[in-house]
Image (cartoon, rainbow over all chains, first blue to last red; front, side):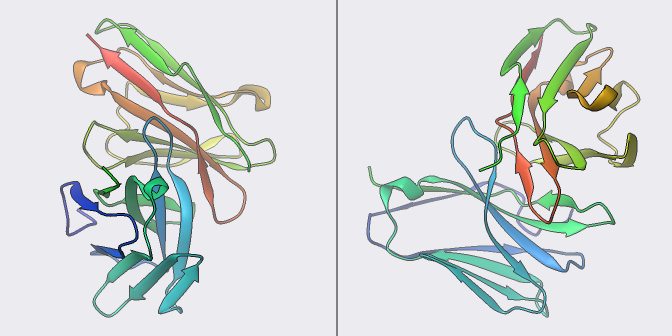
Length: 111
Length: 111
């Protein structure tokens, strides 16, 4: 498959903590998307990092991309309760930009 | 932000019946996608559609599946006949630029 991690991971942290989620991919891509998915809703793009960028920041989010190891990470600083969601990474391929998603990380912040 | 709508939100049908899932994409978007997500697993690409044609499809897009967008109305996914393994949440997405906007999904249960 496209991704090294096949199963949905689960993380539980306290409000105010920092967290990092990792993805590794197997085939070439020029961009990695990070999506969050809230319960009962579709995925929403939160940050996108291109192959010519090593790091991208957006508010409390930070994405990194290492094309040599074909891995990407998403960090959230000072997590808040509303950060509770499932986070997916996805690569783009083909002329029409089909997305290939990883299994995702279910992040729980707050009890 | 731009919204993609999906109708219905839930559908329960008997195996062998036909079902049509409807997607109302963002109005000025040009590219349309269907993805399938089985509970607890990653979302998987089914098909993309542009200029009235299927551009790319995955092996999950069986012969029983078809898509169309007649006269710029709903973008539909039809399954005829349905099978038990078609039970999943189906997400529609549309795109004009680099970002795919996802709908909330239709949960299909085949009995």
